[in-house]
Amino acid sequence: MIHRSLRPIAVLLGFVLLTVAWPAFADTVTLKDGSIIHGKNLQIVDGAITITTGFAGDLSIKQNLVASFSTDTPVYVKTKTSQAVLGKIEPKASGLVIVGSNGEQPITLENIKSAWLTSATDPDLAHWHLELSTDVVGKSGSASGFAGDAAIVATRRTPTDTLKFYSNIDHTVANGQTSSDNYKGGIEDNIFFSPAYSWFGSTELMQDNVQDIHLRTTTTSGIGWNALRGSREDLQFRAGLSYRYDVYDTNPPTPNYSSAGANLAIVHRLDVAPWFVMHNSLGYMPSFKDTNNFIMDHDSNITMPLGNLKPWSLRIGMTNEYTSRPVDGDEHLETTYYLRFVYTVR
Image (cartoon, rainbow, N blue to C red):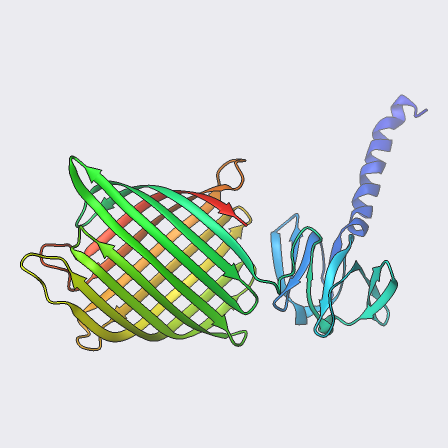
């Protein structure tokens, strides 16, 4: 039995031993410059090792900067030429080994294509996730007041492409009058043919009864430069061609409009923390017929958990659409502020 006077010393000694022993019970990444990072949930995707630390959250480290690493629990490991193997990864003098049910299997860091947790899925397989959302918004521009909005977005992600289908309905009656009545749907694909470059293409159909647009069809295609592409941040610059076709619903009738044009855009995502994500996009689409006839669109939002109500989240943002040649009587700029409740199915 420990004497009462020795209890504080025993508690302190136990704390010190626990602190010293902690690195042995965690995933470890050793960099080529000698730095050592301890954490958990180590994974490898797209040439980067991601590890969750207690001091900086999720860290993403380029695989070519790493000298060695180890995992405290079994993970699935896939090389560039073999199927996935389940086991703990341990460093050896000759390199790395996977310690599994069939013993030790030697492996080199350069030959590892991907690694993922037993609770996750193979990153090489296509993964869909579905977002269902509803909005409470305030508007200014051609229509002012409050609006109701519902949207569905289905996204499939693989290491080589991102395919998205989306639809949106916005219909609001304020003070006895329709202040917003538009419908939108489209498809967008982003195909990565190298780590830095990708092809993109999209088609969107839109009807806006308040702006007297019976139908607007917009098609774009081009090339994207991925200045940043990682687990925590993406930054893509896009440049390409577009084709726009408008059918108006006015009295007297307004002639239909069609023209090819350019398409320039910036798309950015930043995971500030696992629970705080920022998205920003800015697009510019001038007509080749008349460069003074253009459309600019912008969207900025942040997404955060809705308390402990998983899989619900809260998205707060603002969109702007500027049309240099609107239908007579409509505003050039349409601004939407939204508070969006998002239900995500993965």
